[in-house]
Figure (cartoon, rainbow, N blue to C red):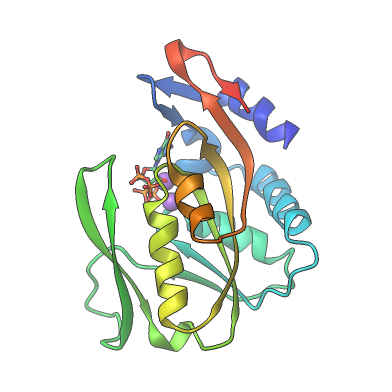
Length: 190
Ligand code: G4P
Ligand code: NA
Ligand code: NA
């Protein structure tokens, strides 16, 4: 997605050799008009697929999924919860996700009410790095005996292992921008 590449070049900032900060439109402040263009592009990428629900993970995925939903006929958006919550149902699908960034494992949950057998699920998220979060969401979909239609990612870090991990499991992956490298402060796309 050319406009996304341009926006990353103009507004993104590189930390070290492997972190791209896009706080001003995606991860902290939200550029709603631009996220709407992202939502449209996800619809293009999954044009002929029947989607019953969009699944994402808190926090940054929520805005993307909610805006994208409006291009998929306002299908419900479910966000998996990372935070411990007293309000969450006891009856949940749960999986463990290892975060390299944080060097720890955390638990991800969705109430069994909101993922159902036979539903066609599109997973959306902001970043794909090592793919552990996306794989965790796939595990939740599998536990529910729902169908994972595909995974849509705004920014893929092509120099990490996420794509290989997902494609080895037969997942259809669509990333709107793929970073080839971000070394020495220079952003290159694939
Ligand atoms: P993985 O799920 O692909 O294995 O990734 P990892 O554990 O390495 O990533 C942990 C968090 O850091 C995720 O967000 C992920 O989206 C984010 N992340 C990874 N690389 C980058 C990067 O280069 N830039 C930015 N901005 N984020 C990156 P999270 O902890 O789930 O947080 P949230 O933003 O969804 O709240
Ligand atoms: Na995320
Ligand atoms: Na994130």
